Length: 509
Image 1 (cartoon, rainbow, N blue to C red):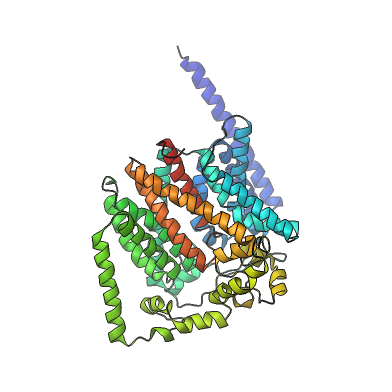
Image 2 (image 1 turned 135 degrees about the horizontal axis):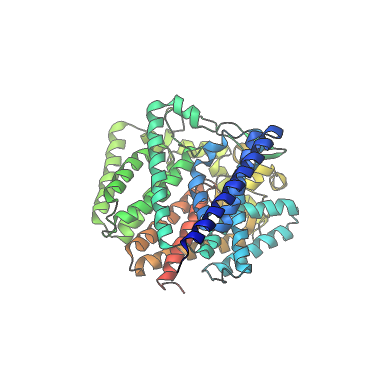
């Protein structure tokens, strides 16, 4: 029989020990705050807590990371300079910590070796990256930083596979992300009505640097207050693409008739989200969401109502252009642009002309094809040498100077606003091909799980993630979204979750 007295005494001892440890930490933090910066001590205590949680409950740390990332740009605005470097890379360091935890659990026998559908492809991609760096004699430090920029979020796929979260954890995460989506939507609506007051509070405008490395470029608000809303994500396009990702999962869930729990709330959230998405003024998010939605509604669900709605919409656009006198070819970007003008400006000759001669996105699409790739067709120029976030942060102009090109967008930014072409320029045709194979493999797996799963939630999640992957393909043609932490981590974690759920149903070998 259980001795209740001994059990009580043992629990009392644990409670006393925990209280003693807590008192010791508090005392050390108090003394440390006198000698050092209070924010530094607070950061150290927080880091220790995350470190312990990552080893004890790694799935909690993974969930914390995904919940934290949408708020990171806003939170960093308030971080003091003495700990900014650590705070800026906290989320990335957490990814590496989770990788270490997985290796530790594997080495200690707590985890067994698992196979994923992209193991071999990822290894081939790493070989392509290393080969590109060696062939081009890229400085080892630059190469490591460039490879890290490309693969850091892909690591989350393998971390998630090995941590193997439960179905309950997956469902809880999806619902939490919907709650965050709802918060961002309400905040965005607030920006529309309160304008400058809320914009100024939310906008992370200050640039931060560490030596010659640019940590954060800051956001310059070149649009009118109350337009191009951005919530806590720092930029309107980051809010828009984040919203589109989870809106597509929500749309997929609405098409599953058996998912009735919270259905009314989900419908309300999506209706309000459409208005907020429009007010982000992010055409990348608009067109990405539309493509994903049409993929779900027309290709997957054969919804004739949507087919008719598309026809009516196209007719309405034609009538509007006929009676409004709007000259689409002459439109260009202005601060007080309306949503309709913003939409049609995407098809404007003047915009394309301005982008090309202003060294914008179109210019770099052309130059990548006619100048960059012919000079390094197979292996590219190496990691952190062309078009991506790493080359911009390092200010590495070597390849641009070699080819006689300006330093990225506007001649100063380093990146080229096109993730696919930056990968092409850095890893060559070989590296880009392997990356695309890896991406398409996961997309096809999502479709396979959607078709064969007997669980409504699994089907909805798989189809929604597949639609989001289509949206991200377009997004990444218009910016470096495969590197952006407000979108890319969700791509790799949620594809891993689909794989996990497919394996549990034995749909994937």
